[in-house]
Image 1 (spheres, rainbow, N blue to C red):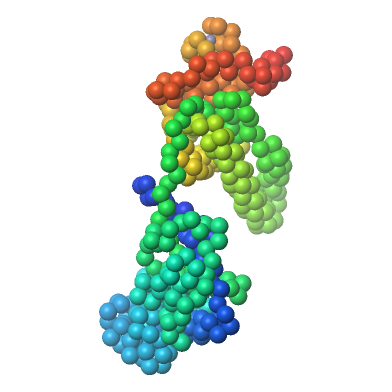
Image 2 (image 1 turned 90 degrees about the horizontal axis):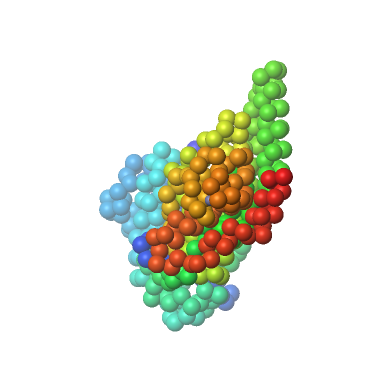
Amino acid sequence: MVNKVGGIAAPFYTLIFYSHIVIKTLQIKLLPDDDQKQAIIDTFTRFNEACNFVSRTAFEKKLYNKVFLQRIVYRDIRGKFDLAAQLAIRVIAKVVETYKADKDHFHEFRDYGSIVYDQRILSFRGMNQVSISTTKGRILIPMTIGKYGQIPLERIRGQCDLVRKNKLFYLMVAVEVPEEPTVEPEDIIGVDMGIVNIAVDSSGKYYSGDHIRDVRDHNADLRSRLQAVGNNHANRKSAGRHLKKLSGKESRFARNTNHVISKEIVQKAKGTSSAIALENLEGIRMRTTVRKGNRYIHNSWSFHQLRSFIEYKAREAGIPVIAVDPHNTSRECPNCHAISRKNRPERSHFRCISCGLEGEADFIASLNIRNRAAVNQPIVAGAIFDQTIHPAASQRASAVGS
Ligand SMILES: [Zn+2]
């Protein structure tokens, strides 16, 4: 069995979070002339042929240690493949690296498997040129960083990969970028991950994903019919296959919807200089195990995913996220703070038994979440309680209450 490895280009903008810096993968396009292009192609060919040679030796001799392997193959790499000393070292390092993950199979490298460059064989000359070592010696190639050109090149960390995509050549470079400065919040947006709605924020915006719910309901219906088929007939296997397919499709839908919703919430927070308040995780878990009849809907909907999307998008945008105590957020009155089970005459409706405040349950919960976050902040806004008479809420309240 052969594993194809090498040349896996990173997605255009990968984000990894460190404490206060973000590592971004910068894609730099090379603009070689015909001769330079030939030199690059030739280097790719030799580099990957050398990788395959070293890979064979390593696999046959079961030798995966860089130092020992280098003793055996270094001379041959230099001689047979005519590679510069440091490129030969990179070949060995790359092969050793891939066998770290899997020693059970021979690793074969593609013709255009990525070439790893370090500072000894690559250097940037300003923002427009890069000097790299090739089989034709060092060559100076024009390059373009594109719209991310503001990122200073001295922030480049470590090695970079030379890759070929759609017959073009790119350097994939990891760059340290400071996180966006944290927004000084002037307000707080409370977000309730609801049961009736996917999410509701404290300004009265409902994120329903209606389209997605239609698909989900349709799938739930289809699922129960498939399960019936699976139980009653011999074609259990095919029903099982359909079920699997269905859940994949559904989770892609959920993922996409969560991306759209989280993006909208974070943009709103950014646009209004607001922090985002959410219930902490336990609360969400608590409320997703409600009624047996609805379990399918709750389980299929990925609240945790939505939450983590909001968190990382907020972090990227410098928006603070505040987690609040989730207890009774759906039973407390945001006006008089009376807490009672009876404040919820119906699942989707809130009516305070003490002061009479009414509204849609999820919206009321988002106000409580906002209030709880505000209590601990030095930025309590006076308008919090006025918002209970938000037009969206009272409209919905009368529709539900009638
Ligand atoms: Zn009340």
